[in-house]
Image (cartoon, rainbow, N blue to C red; front, side, top):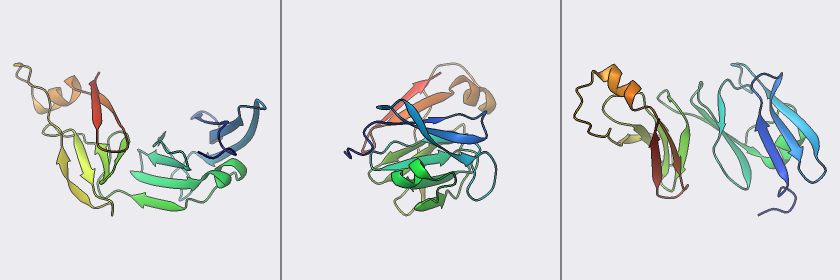
Length: 163
């Protein structure tokens, strides 16, 4: 908990010049707009938040790149520099979830749901199976029939919700 940041709201607005908008909820004022849409080193295409209280953690799904920003930098700079920037070795097909021993990313694979990475960001294997339905699916039908969203507790649990 940090009392300087307890009233910040950060939104992703993909149709604006800057993707992220930072608001001070107490004053009801916008205090910054940052990070441009694009494929450059300090730009993003499909960002999603990967929750944390002490930093701003973002996964750019299109680039399979995980970035960690100091909150101060995100509040004040139009092009904040990431304190850490990691590109995953495999393309991700969805969001990232953090776990104690690394992270997981959705995989577009008919045999498993997730790619698993260790704390050094090396691929550590695959995780998760599709439900049995008794229906005979082709591989592409299985991928489409069992599209899913997921969340983690940032510790040791994964919840999967099939769409």
